[in-house]
Amino acid sequence: MSKISDSELSAVLGSAAKKGCALRFAVLGAGNGGLAMAGHLGVMGFPVRLYNRTDEKLAAVRWHGGIKVEGAVRGFGPVELATSDAAVAVEGADVIMVATPSTAHRSLAALVAPALRDGQVIVLNPGRTGGALEFRAALLDAGLAARPVIAEAQTFIYASRALSRHEAKIFQIKRGLALAALPSFRTPEVLAVLEPAFPEFKAGGSVLATSMENIGAVFHPALTILNAGWIEGTRGAFDYYLDGITPSVALVLERVDAERLAVARSLGVRSLSAVEWLYLSYGASGANLREAIKATAAYRGIRAPATVDHRYVNEDVPMSLVPMASIGAMLGVPTPSIDLVIDLASAMRGVDFRAIGRTVERLGIAGMSVKDIHLLVTEAGL
Image (tube, rainbow, N blue to C red; front, side, top):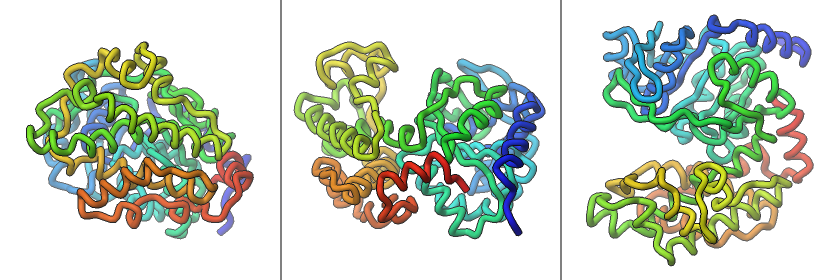
């Protein structure tokens, strides 16, 4: 069966953009982020379905008929269906918001591939590094017949926490959040579809730009690993950023950041440094990374994780640092500090993060030139 044409796909997206509050959402993942997102969508009046791999976690949402939300958003958000069947969850949805950890993206793509239809918008919240590319490759590996459009956000739209299995608190909704579609010429069409629910999204340059501006890759893994003794000795009883980033630790983070920027440049992408990101995102000041972090009021009181068995290592190393190192190796960009963090994390956790992480092979770009990669992200899509 032949796939629909570009013009037919544009027509489907244009029709979805006109639906307003009739726009149908599926939220995949019922953790801190997914519960908040599904609840917020329900509060706003959008029909929403919620998927979670573990069915037990959905029992309270079914019992109450939705999710109670407090904080920056207040109210009760009805959920029309809570299911552990991903294919059922995405059926009939105009927009599929993926709010699972990025380690689940590949397996989730295989689960939903047979159920997808033309013109559905899939948003990875966020993609981490290479999320949209990996999701695309996984859909193609699964024999995808339809033409959905994949997009990824640079970071998660909410600062939120689950208060129970049917309650969530949204501390903040982030504004001006970069989002890019694959291919990038679809970004305006995707933003038009999302605008009734999420006007906070803005156009990112491409999925290369949203991927390489992954600031969590700089802040989380190295900081956790270099503070492992303190974390394990105190169960995280210290301020993660303000106490954990000492002058020596800050120097390592700056090296990781410099290598991230070098890989981005090799791809022809201009990315903000971690210091520039702090200036723009939080109005911080300071001559270097440590000074800027110390001047960031939002970091005060954020405690360290209680263990190194945490997403800052288990997710951010294979899904953020490994792809940066893999792309760097393919394009001849040395990443010694990133490589060191990956090796230390693998030793500490007893896991070969390179073996399970996103490599250029899993991203579907192995052996490609920079020109070919740009053609893929700007024009190819599915």
